[in-house]
Length: 461
Image (cartoon, rainbow, N blue to C red; front, side, top):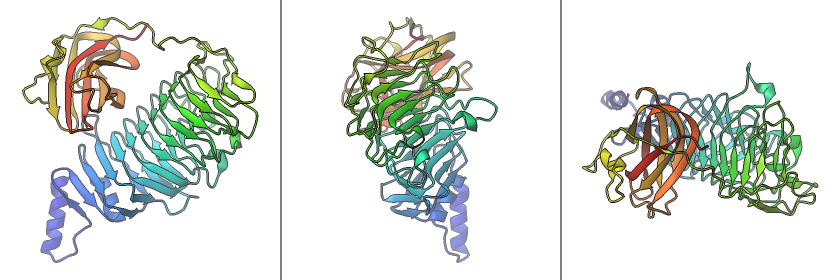
């Protein structure tokens, strides 16, 4: 498709016609400056392509063609590249119906729903701003899994319908299920600024959704209305979420809550190291309004949370001493061999030689390091020592495969801490795999991925 696009431009010039507003700038890079050009570029994008938006205002967009886990498609622009739906009472700003896109840097505004992901998995929303939205800002639904929203700013939602004004909405309520739970699973909401003027919850986790994470976010409850039970920063009605390290101010009623809307759902969520104050509030509530009715695996409020200012108290359940929050690690699994998509002379075997002074390195977005465990085994975490990991942050995915051909994404858009050159552990929903693949997307200094050592462990016990 890239060659075809260049050919169309050349033919237009030969015939004396006005050139189209899409022009390739090197292999796989398309720069656009018009609404029509943007949609054309999206429609024609192939795995590995990048679309760069010039500053300006664009119409709402539809994304229907997918990248791949190894070669995602990137749509990027500055905050002054604005997708404007034109009416916050109708339509979607970004209608995302595809897998493996990276949406970075630009702004979405003035639509009924900001970003609507439907059956869309493995996507990363990074550093976008979403505001002046009639209902919810960002919504993952209908089996949209393994997505990441990070370092983004969502505010002024619910401007038409306060009841549906969530900043980020994960899954679907039972009355919107189609024959069974909406298993929009393992979505991660990380390091975002949510609010002010979010009329409902800042993060609403619906029944049917499992195994995600809400961590490192800042919640500003100014403007929250309490409509349709939207009276807390986070409402967890799904199962098995980690909700940790968030900071909030000014909830309508309570900081965090769980509810059992459907039997068996709203359970097994863990609240750790969250801080802030519910005050100023508008109704009497709790720091943690947690319900465990009918839960075989109860919700846990750890005693390292510090959410103050609620009139009724800190928590409806007795806080638990969670220690370091981790079960003892599973034994390290033997690795039979390592291969890679590329290297610069620092070969893949260096990553499993037990020597932190050696490394595997490769340049480019989507390079990968594959570990062969020799046979299918239960896996649940990686430990990675990044080369120069104390000086830069690396972005990566983790994928699992039984046969080396068909891959399942276990972690998408994860980032290293940038604080240590030693091992960092990354847990994920466990599964059985013979092959484990780390896919690199560069680091904050350059587009290299460099691993000093990597180990694989089974699920925590």
